[in-house]
Length: 74
Image 1 (tube, one colour):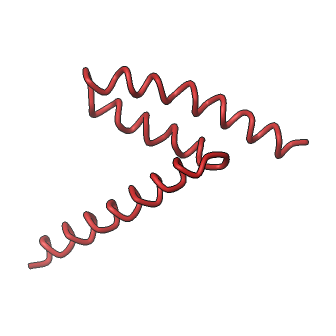
Image 2 (cartoon, rainbow, N blue to C red):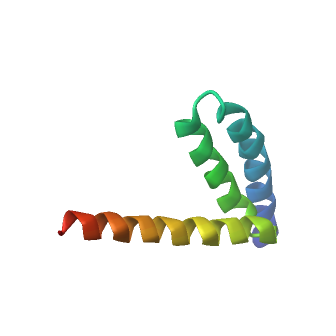
């Protein structure tokens, strides 16, 4: 029962944050984009598209982090 409540809670939080992030992004992208990414973290338990987006974002983040670290050590 607790697992079902956790999934339901995450879906509600994700679907509240997603439209907020979409609406805020054109005005304040530095706030809107993280809100969208946070909402997909909540939605990934139920939706494959959110999980794939998070995998892609994580890979891009790791690549950018490695690039900056490499540039700093030159």
